[in-house]
Image (tube, rainbow, N blue to C red; front, side):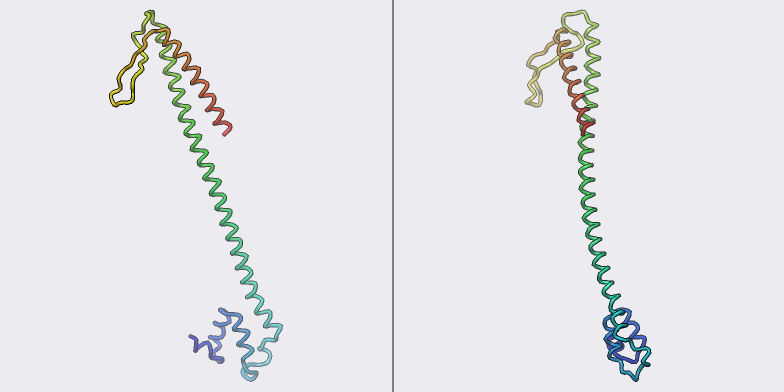
Length: 177
């Protein structure tokens, strides 16, 4: 193809080359002898500068496109980081919500136990017992247990207050973020 494009009489090759490389087109037209083409078809120096100007515009637009692509890439990275932060915050809130649900279930269980304990008349409860165990081994051994109804009711009241306070803290954190 190089030999074909060097041929000054081959107009197809010249057209292809001028479409691909505008600078060479201007140089080639300057090399064409005056007897090969009429004077009207030879470009004047002003026309040559016009033909070079689109090449400069193309390089400017390529630079602008590259800059805008880089700016878009930076913007995408920033948005991705924001989304990751939002996702992390959402995961944290989801975890807090699960803890809140567990505390609410514990509150419900304590309420049911309190109702049953209040219905009993015995000094010691036959339904409930609070055990303290050594949980350091696989088979945890019981250290002692409490089945006194009044102590169990006091413990339930204490635990309900603590759980209610913790639920309130979690709800505040969920609302405020």
